[in-house]
Image (cartoon, rainbow, N blue to C red; front, side):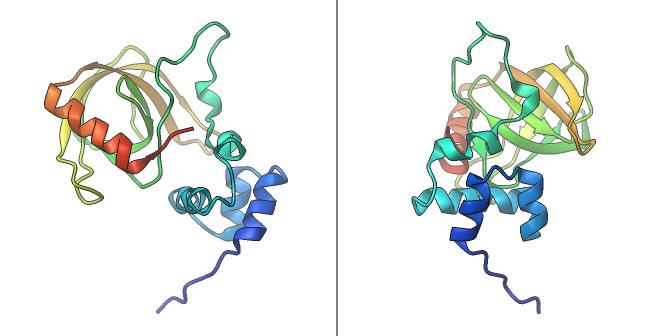
Amino acid sequence: MRQKRTIKAKEIVSDIRSGMINRQLMDKYDVSLAKLQNIFRMLLDAHALEQRELEPLLSIPHERLDIGKRRRLERNYVFVRLPIYDLENLVNGGEVVDITETGFQVTGIATKAGEIKEFLIQADYFADIYPFTFESQCQWASRNEDGQLVAGFKITSISEGALEELRKLNSMLTLSP
């Protein structure tokens, strides 16, 4: 049985404040991105860090907007591994990085700008959230520094019931800046 490791809050807070980026923190503490996001949540809950101190670690370079363009809704960063599935091709699945009522960012989905896809999110194993579907249009697609597919989508069609489940997901499984 693998022994549980302990990460000292004081040490990781010091590393974050010194400017270490996600990849450096993941390497130093030998954790996945999902586990690192869990650590961020625990540090916020314990008031060891303020949300603004995590902003550089939660921001994704691909999502910087031109001056003059502002988001109507703040990003909600998912702090658990949240799978998302392309309903036309269930093998084309990925993970939600951040999500709002109007759009979201994913990793692992093969797509290109302008493409319209219908997605399924099944978060019921995390919380009392029913699986829901919605239609989205890809706004941009690229690869991150690790070569992983990254894409941003605008939600173009969603039922009232699905929207209610999305709102529950946002309140239960995400961090807001």
